[in-house]
Image (spheres, rainbow, N blue to C red):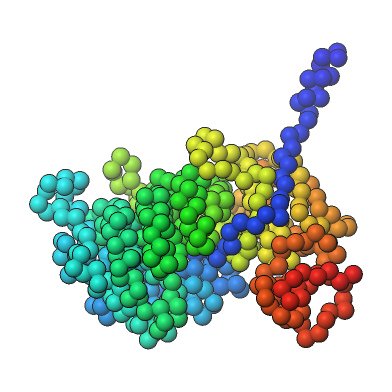
Length: 510
């Protein structure tokens, strides 16, 4: 009898996960976005309704970064469907909504290259000895033409109402392709930046930023040489890469050490999760996408840019059947849920990050995952991250299991109220439920039962009376006079109780 009771008690015990959030600040998060392309990279043109639904603080999703192709053109009107005009309406929409637009070349003009064409040169399979397979590289005698060519793009966009925020050196310089592409070895990029990046006309075009080459996966052989060279380091503002075959907590985190050390941004500029599938993504598959977003944040990412905005596995439906491949055989599938320009569940997963994490600074937690682990060692069932933004602490919780889980959250500051964003399935009613948290009095602890297969985002409001709030303010050192924590300047010394910034230092008024 005693044995039976003991076993029953053990079985009845509910497992608990403890999450401790520290005040230690990590990277600042610039934002989230996607690429201005649709079906084989064709830009949206005037058919950009999905951009209107996805971008801006007032949108349901809250994206703020748009990636566009810098096609190998000189005027923006002589390369058919892929000229600069194709992305212009989308770029104009994003800029009007306060967003960021950056351009990436898949190839510089063909006349600058070793194979004389914008194509990568991989025509007949992988055989490098095939005379028709000519690897397309930027000719060294044309290095000096590269940045002036980028300046023509910046001027054309400016003349058409879009001040581009950043330009990249190259899309996937490590990938030999049979479409538009250009190959660079790491030292090629060092030579290009070191000797010619000064020609980028930053002064005329609003301090436009320079992005490193964006390799197929984050690898140190492409990022470290640019950071180790002092001249290149001075020119590069954003270090970027993709995730194809490269897990963020193994590769991006390692590749981001030097860039973050030198104050650079770290952007993931292209990846698609589960794109070659014969069905609309399941809720579990959308939670895998949430985990990728979360792991990128833990790896030091400051900007995350998805691949297509409009696809059955992306943020807006296409209204069309799609193709997929199995063993090199192409099939076609369709779904009534793939309505053109209707927001898909994956968009609402992205909104947890885009609406809440943009503009925040990540905080260290007891559950942060270290680099160097294999996929099997990375905890997949439950993932967490935390952020501070103004007077809020944001805690992200992902449960991919089919079981509930008790969670105890320990915060670095007392909180007095809060909001929960909760998503539990692909069903529209469960995609983004919002509710107020029941916090009776100021506390630095909160208990929660994570629903099965759920994405939960807590937005806790920091208690004004807390005296251990060091490190929360975004007000820059050296600002004179009195300000609120979110940067609002006050005309006189405040009389209400709370925490303020006076001459760059935090002051508690009791």
